[in-house]
Length: 195
Image 1 (cartoon, rainbow, N blue to C red):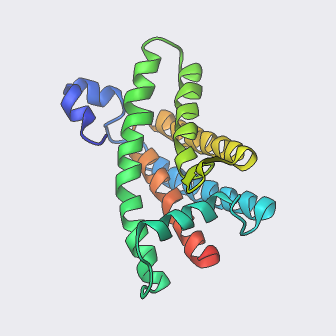
Image 2 (image 1 turned 90 degrees about the vertical axis):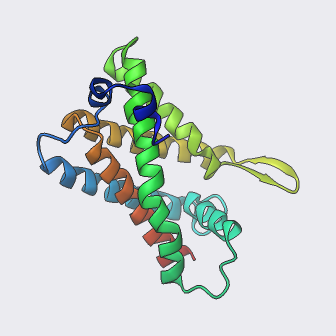
């Protein structure tokens, strides 16, 4: 996803989707704070509603980490680095370039800003069912309707924050920072409280 703007767009097209520096540097700070706050909000809601059960979305993400790599012998600090460093670069860059950049702009070519943003954020939320809400087990496909729906709603809200940061700054850079701050905070909370 990260290469798509350079493959399919001209320089003017890349600028149009937000590949430009923001006018105000304050948008980096607001993006950073919104990303941290959103991750804390998701953590608190999951903790209050579901504790450490499998219905907690951050527990599902922790379990996905455990299934990805044999974690025996690693300290929590080492695990935090192994899983957080990629989460600071790949998903914020790729997802922001695609969702808040290419997809948002393509939608805005046909619809106004608000409906385009709602559709883009909706897709972002549904895609994140692969982190929690929809999984594969020995029994087959498992769907967690209540917590999965809540997780999609939380990811929709988080995407809406990222989209707002992008719109206010006319740049994807603060949205990427916001997304990275979300992932960093999420992993900090996972490895501090749920590991």
